[in-house]
Image (cartoon, rainbow, N blue to C red; front, side, top):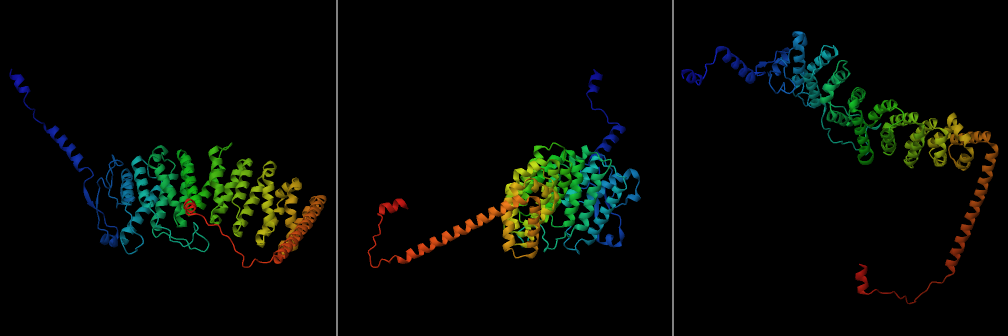
Length: 508
């Protein structure tokens, strides 16, 4: 009976149990809660940067710093042991998440300088190969890069209606480039790191991260676009899981540029990346890749600002034809579809691209498109802009194109012969006249009988056109004489039918 009563009484807490519970409570309430002041970094910084650093959940979020030891971010990597360097690396990354307004150089000058020195320390530490990119380190680095890099650009205030920078416009430079450049360098070294765990890295460098990175290509600072070009190329090469998403996202950027805004600063850089991407496509080409050519690259010939990225665009198109020569006719049809009619400089670029495409074109594909193609070339031969006419004549100097013309001369010569004869009679530029004579000589050496036949046909058509013009002149003279012989009616009553109100209301 006594034992039953004693068993119901509360037990005493032993010393060991109380000490363990106290340690557990203190660990839950005061872990990473110690407050310490940053060490002095020079007299100037200590006077202006007297900041108290709290190693709490703000600096070390619990989601990414489980098991990470708190280290003062103001310490140097040289002043601590190797076991603490990983924690100091994360601490410094979180310290650099603070973004300053760099447009005012006098504002937060000491803080900006201290952040820059910290970023340089991080780059040196990563380049030394001492860092271990654990999940907390990867999460902290991606967060720091996102905080510093991802931003909304101010509205474009350039007066020009075309997108991108033209030759007459000075490039815009971001005042925060002194910090952004180091962040980009750190991100590039992170992506190129040999022992990087890609399975962990892709969790934090996800599709949203890549999409925000692509948005930065619209930056007006050419230095930033150049860094982004290198970084996106490395991401595409290393993170295979992101490749379809990157291709789709770049296609969407091109669609928006071509069919909606015609304003974007980074089309040239994106095409430069895809030039190397296309060269790595496996054969046979997937339908997705062919659609990218037909729906994205070919329509890029339409905007007025094509001159900014035309060199990169031509390289991408030629890479596709090099992969599959059957695409040449589709490319040539696209060029004819978007051929400029009033822009001579753009027409010169199209003729240059046309020559490069024809060099890669097989005979079968050439024969599919040669009739409309040489009708357009004939118009270029007759162009009053002497540079366009010269460039069109120089196509005959290309051996591959001349071989294509020779084997299909019975179709091509009748299309261009009249243009050459008209040039001989009417063109104002002596250089164009000399080139026309050279082309006619080449055609005569190719097939003299065909040239004579074309000459006779041209003379017949010319005389027929002269006779038709004479008939039209005589007809108009008769009409004028008949109009003069008719006497005007003076004083005669003219009856004008008046509609009823009901009819008017119905008509209305």
